[in-house]
Length: 309
Ligand SMILES: O=C(O)C(=O)C[C@]1(C(=O)O)C=C[C@@H](O)C=C1
Image (cartoon, rainbow, N blue to C red):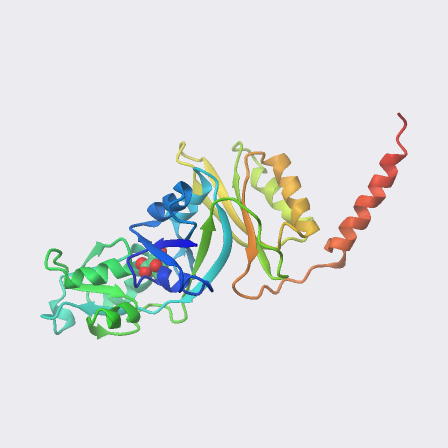
């Protein structure tokens, strides 16, 4: 297996990749951004890409949501959760917060430390970086000239960076969720605690269109763990929905919901069923169990066998 991920080494995304059992002993190619990582998978240069999809404070990672919803089909095969905490690393010549004029980091990291930054370094200008690790490593580089970087404690330690403050995140206990993406192939077997992801373009903007999608899940007792709307880019008011459901396509209620969705939303994109990183608790009512679906299906099948002709 050749893995790729949002690099360089030292990103939270690399920490997520290292949770994959064989990733530590496999080739790992850092990519400059999420699109580049996914492109390596699409072109065959890598077999799988780890990319961020959602943070518990800042929400969905738009680049990833958009990139997996369009272009050549991809498949999610697993997910990983990484606890997030940030440090403020500085250049050697900086000794106090007052000296910091520019601070670099990834946009999602900046959003998670904005409150701290406004209170503690209000004079500092934010310089976007392609990742937290890229912003941190640039401190060592004579070319770039920002004074500070917001990054993981690990990359600061590994690169020997001077750390001025620790735990600068606005919300303690934040978590980022990552997905491992491959080219379409075999779907991982159900584990009993699984998720499925589906992209649902809204065919037309009319009353009840979203309701029609949601009721496909509701009537089968399928719980949604995430729903996000993203603009398609085709004009104002044109959206698709990115949805995670609790359950696996191998389960009758999920398969039946997908069948219903295919009727109301024929251009839907199934992105995979895969083991969930944390236990899902939603209970399944008896009438939504596989047995209930199978019994109902054979009952209707029996009726149709009696059709004349
Ligand atoms: O920059 C990194 O280290 C990343 O892995 C990206 C990323 C993200 O996209 O959300 C991952 C975790 C943190 O929430 C901040 C940045």
